[in-house]
Amino acid sequence: MKNSGIFFLLLFLYSCQQNPTQVQQTPSKSGNGRPTEPEWARSAVLYECNIRQFSAAGNFAGVEAQLPRLRALGVDVLWLMPIHPIGLEKRKGSLGSPYSVRDYYAVNPDYGTVDDLKKLIGEAHKIGLKVILDWVPNHTSWDAVWLKDHPEYYTRINGNLTNPINEHGEPIADWSDICDLDYKQPGTRRAMIDAMKYWIKTADIDGFRVDMAGLVPNDFWAEARPALDSVKQMFMLAEWQDEPGHFKSCFNANYGWKWKDITKDIASGKQNATSLDTLLNFLGDYYPQDYYQLYFTQNHDENTWSGYEKELYGDAADAFNVLMFTWQGIPMLYNGQEDGLAQRLAFFEKDPVKWKDYGKTAFFQNLSVLKHSNKAVWAGKNGGKLKKIPTDRDTEVYAFTREKDGDKVVVVVNLSNRSQSVTLNPDEQAAGAYLSVFGASTVQVTKDMQLTLKPWEYLVLTNK
Picture 1: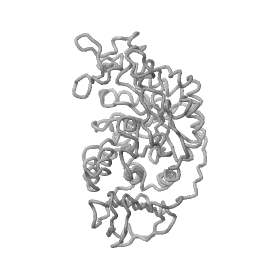
Picture 2: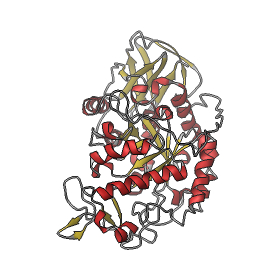
Picture 3: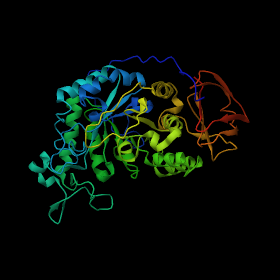
Picture 4: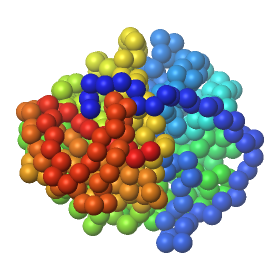
């Protein structure tokens, strides 16, 4: 259970990647019309890196220095927050927002040079890490190169440039440091695709995390995906949850914002464990059958504007991190979580992570090993279908099993701040002997199995 040791002896063998400059021609669509994802994405653990705050230096070299540690943590995919120069006009704070892009073809000089970025990515590839860039297609800074050279790329209201327009057609007043791009213009579309392809060819990146993907027309994404895949098969992640069509046009995964909101509500007592059942049913009806979502308890927005993990989840944080790795999607860590980050990192200023002893490393390593080694917890349809285990405490205890190609997991989590004595009623397929991920002890799952769980305690079992 919760207070126990390492699950497996962790040996992460660093593998070499094929030629980084090799151009790969890959099919853009699967047989059911969904854009295909790279095979490595199916069991991946993502890690968001806020370059400015990740190290005292706040640059690419500061990230590169910690790549071996991240790989040993169990990370497969490194997501770099925007790498580009930041606008000066209408800048917020002294350093500005990384999402106020001045030049899509350059890197922020505070971070280093293009060669420094290429070196970082090359070193990541050598030890088996993939790298995706944060891409900001909806808007630029007010002093962007494009605004000077191609003013026709931009949205105008009554002849005037505007802040970004939300999904309801209204300017977003608080986004005063950025200027909206107009995707009714063919030139804007061509230029954006060319800029994205530039970084695939120049730096051999492995995908994009796309900021505010739903504010850009979906037919643009249908146009962009085959163009990007013609250079190299991409992993595409949409920061958006309200467009099911994204899974047909371009994206392999989207943000699990609803999961984040519901889990925070459960932690604070506003909802209970059955809310996850309601969410799972909703997602299955709303999205295509083989959707993936990204799950997280922290990211740069949550950390800065809402609170660090302990503020948002209290003592429930580890319980929801367990669900993040086992529920049905792709798990993501934000830099510092493996160290128990207890600070809200400033968004517009230098405010580096105050690294201590990486005290959560073993916890996340155990979950990463499970993610990699047991197909049952792979993302979406690549993993096993989540089957609830009935209990006599369903409002407080969330129990389920997943099975894929003979691999099985059983997960039981007390999603309440009170101790629970609970009886589980697993079916015959779930019964059997398992290894406890947090304890290395053997646990027999039986009909009418009885457990006593402390507040927010969890049991994670694997058959391999």
